[in-house]
Image (cartoon, rainbow, N blue to C red; front, side, top):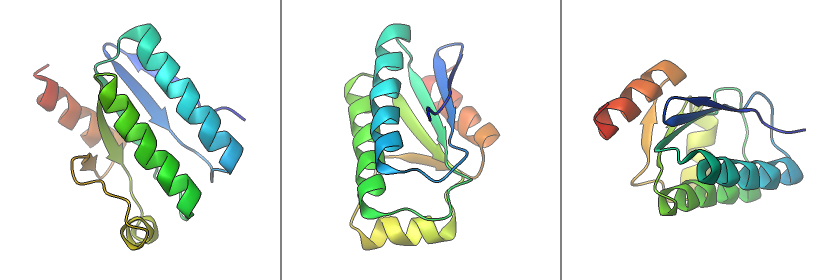
Length: 118
Protein backbone atom coordinates (compact mmCIF):
# COMPACT_ATOMS: atom_id res chain seq x y z
CA UNK A 1 0.00 0.00 0.00
CA UNK A 2 1.39 3.41 -0.96
CA UNK A 3 1.09 6.57 1.09
CA UNK A 4 -0.41 9.42 -0.95
CA UNK A 5 1.83 12.46 -1.43
CA UNK A 6 -0.05 15.60 -2.46
CA UNK A 7 1.48 18.70 -4.05
CA UNK A 8 0.29 22.14 -2.95
CA UNK A 9 2.23 25.03 -4.51
CA UNK A 10 5.89 24.41 -3.58
CA UNK A 11 5.01 21.97 -0.82
CA UNK A 12 4.32 18.28 -0.48
CA UNK A 13 1.68 17.15 2.02
CA UNK A 14 1.72 13.65 3.44
CA UNK A 15 -0.85 12.26 5.83
CA UNK A 16 0.00 8.78 7.04
CA UNK A 17 -3.36 7.18 7.84
CA UNK A 18 -2.33 3.75 9.12
CA UNK A 19 0.41 2.03 11.10
CA UNK A 20 3.46 1.51 8.91
CA UNK A 21 5.08 -1.83 8.23
CA UNK A 22 8.72 -2.01 7.16
CA UNK A 23 8.01 -2.39 3.43
CA UNK A 24 5.52 0.50 3.35
CA UNK A 25 7.96 2.74 5.23
CA UNK A 26 10.76 2.02 2.76
CA UNK A 27 8.41 2.57 -0.20
CA UNK A 28 7.29 5.87 1.35
CA UNK A 29 10.92 6.96 1.72
CA UNK A 30 11.62 6.26 -1.94
CA UNK A 31 8.35 7.83 -3.14
CA UNK A 32 8.84 11.02 -1.13
CA UNK A 33 12.42 11.56 -2.26
CA UNK A 34 11.42 10.95 -5.88
CA UNK A 35 8.52 13.41 -5.56
CA UNK A 36 10.80 16.07 -4.03
CA UNK A 37 13.17 15.64 -6.97
CA UNK A 38 10.41 15.68 -9.60
CA UNK A 39 8.57 18.71 -8.21
CA UNK A 40 11.49 20.71 -6.74
CA UNK A 41 9.41 20.98 -3.56
CA UNK A 42 10.75 23.47 -1.03
CA UNK A 43 8.90 21.99 1.91
CA UNK A 44 7.23 18.84 3.19
CA UNK A 45 4.60 18.41 5.89
CA UNK A 46 4.33 14.86 7.23
CA UNK A 47 1.26 14.28 9.39
CA UNK A 48 1.51 11.24 11.65
CA UNK A 49 -1.61 11.85 13.75
CA UNK A 50 -2.94 8.35 13.00
CA UNK A 51 0.20 6.59 14.21
CA UNK A 52 -0.20 5.44 17.81
CA UNK A 53 2.87 3.21 17.93
CA UNK A 54 6.28 3.34 16.28
CA UNK A 55 9.00 0.71 16.37
CA UNK A 56 12.75 1.25 16.07
CA UNK A 57 12.91 0.52 12.33
CA UNK A 58 10.05 2.88 11.44
CA UNK A 59 11.55 5.55 13.72
CA UNK A 60 14.90 5.21 11.94
CA UNK A 61 13.25 5.41 8.51
CA UNK A 62 11.34 8.54 9.59
CA UNK A 63 14.56 10.15 10.83
CA UNK A 64 16.30 9.17 7.58
CA UNK A 65 13.47 10.60 5.46
CA UNK A 66 13.78 13.92 7.28
CA UNK A 67 17.55 14.05 6.81
CA UNK A 68 17.39 13.00 3.16
CA UNK A 69 14.67 15.55 2.43
CA UNK A 70 16.86 18.28 3.91
CA UNK A 71 19.79 17.17 1.77
CA UNK A 72 17.54 17.63 -1.25
CA UNK A 73 16.71 21.19 -0.14
CA UNK A 74 13.25 20.65 1.37
CA UNK A 75 12.34 21.82 4.87
CA UNK A 76 10.29 19.29 6.83
CA UNK A 77 7.55 19.76 9.42
CA UNK A 78 6.23 16.76 11.35
CA UNK A 79 2.69 17.15 12.69
CA UNK A 80 0.42 15.20 15.01
CA UNK A 81 3.02 13.36 17.09
CA UNK A 82 1.16 11.25 19.65
CA UNK A 83 2.57 11.05 23.22
CA UNK A 84 3.55 7.37 22.90
CA UNK A 85 5.36 8.08 19.64
CA UNK A 86 7.25 11.02 21.19
CA UNK A 87 8.33 8.84 24.11
CA UNK A 88 9.48 6.06 21.81
CA UNK A 89 11.47 8.42 19.59
CA UNK A 90 13.32 9.82 22.59
CA UNK A 91 13.92 6.38 24.12
CA UNK A 92 15.34 5.12 20.81
CA UNK A 93 17.67 8.13 20.58
CA UNK A 94 16.18 9.38 17.31
CA UNK A 95 17.43 12.96 17.03
CA UNK A 96 14.80 15.36 15.71
CA UNK A 97 16.48 18.46 17.16
CA UNK A 98 16.34 20.54 13.98
CA UNK A 99 12.91 19.31 12.90
CA UNK A 100 9.97 21.67 13.04
CA UNK A 101 6.86 20.20 14.63
CA UNK A 102 3.25 21.31 14.91
CA UNK A 103 0.08 19.98 16.49
CA UNK A 104 -1.83 19.46 13.25
CA UNK A 105 -1.52 19.63 9.47
CA UNK A 106 -2.93 23.16 9.21
CA UNK A 107 -0.49 24.58 11.77
CA UNK A 108 2.34 22.62 10.14
CA UNK A 109 1.61 24.20 6.78
CA UNK A 110 1.49 27.66 8.39
CA UNK A 111 4.85 27.03 10.10
CA UNK A 112 6.38 25.88 6.81
CA UNK A 113 5.09 28.96 4.99
CA UNK A 114 6.54 31.24 7.68
CA UNK A 115 9.90 29.42 7.58
CA UNK A 116 10.11 29.72 3.79
CA UNK A 117 8.87 33.30 3.76
CA UNK A 118 5.75 32.62 1.72
